[in-house]
Image 1: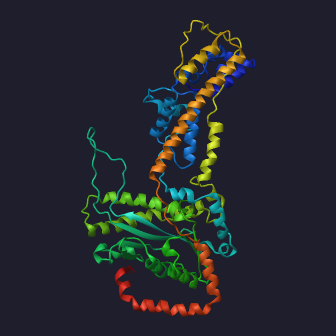
Image 2: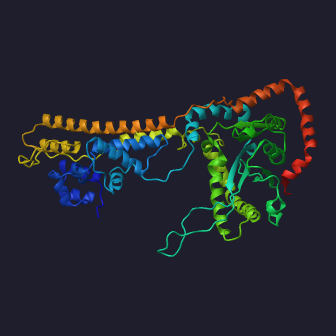
Image 3: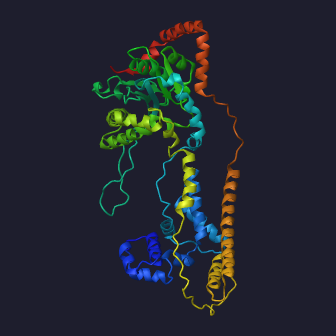
Length: 535
């Protein structure tokens, strides 16, 4: 089996040309002596020798590799089918009707090891375009604000919601009898959506969660018999299982404010997204009254700046799916489904919400310790993907060159039968025969090489143009009149304005406080029915 690379072989040939004996060079580099002698006599590397028989030329394949890198940088890495389609378009532009072989993709990737087949991580288009270097740098001014910078790490908190389908398990590999396909695996039949509000600190502490079920009211039969497993948890019910304005206020009053109260009067920081329930007047005012500094993340940047999203929610959902698989053989009616959900989620939470994992999320986002380089170097930033394109073009497609032997003999090709070329490949083969002729000189060979390269570039550009035309036609087909969109203000700026107004109008704050008490008096029955607090 070959134990050396083409680059090592080139270095060995250079050593021999510099006066080193062939036998000694062969031993030093671990290359067979016959291989060295053959290459010194002018034989070509295998890849170069086989290039005339490839369906696409080297330049055309380099263009394909560049296209793959560019699409990847744009967040649109092509599939094998899309790459094959583009390559066959180049062939069609050259006048060839025969498609590529079954193993062309495999051999193409072997010729360009910088490319690799990977499983992509699905990400929303808004997130790709929302988290940019400019947005993060602009938002980072809030982090370095003296007021926020003075807050202690034990008083820095991150809150976020996550949703889980109650009966949705994993799609991992299973074992079964050989020869039986496909294997079936039963799962719980429930598909109720449940939202959980979680909150973590920069020191690795997690607050009790708020679980939001889908329903009009929280039902007692949803819970296991042993309620001690859910000490300090809160439970709420909404019609769609999502959070709303009332739920956010309840979370502040029942969870965040009492559980994060410092021993001495100190400011607390709450990092959260700009969900509609987080930017209401009542939510902001309640935080201001309790010395809580709100810091809203830029839109569509949770995958870069949200500690919970980066380090905790992934392991949490993976552990939940594993736990759900252990109980999937039980009956899963609506009542039992919610019981199993709570039991599985509790066990998964114990494995995911550990101090090391929580602190890793804060460190990865650069929110604590404060480090702007962390989010700017995140691989999911579009700019970081673009930076790798030129690197790949400059370093990834360099082919090792073998030193030419001026004493190489060229076979006489005078008996070659000339025909009118019908495709670019025919032109390439005939130009190669001309360049090998003894009558050709360096100038003619250079001219023929440029002609060949020009034809190949023409085919590639034509295929690229056809690809762009197809995309534009699809966009025109799907275009619709644009809907009106209101300008969404920055919640952080909105919060600052409210603080200024409230600071100048202290009398208004005093007048607002009784209103909150009055609301609580007018709606005691509704909150008792909708919320259960387990002590």
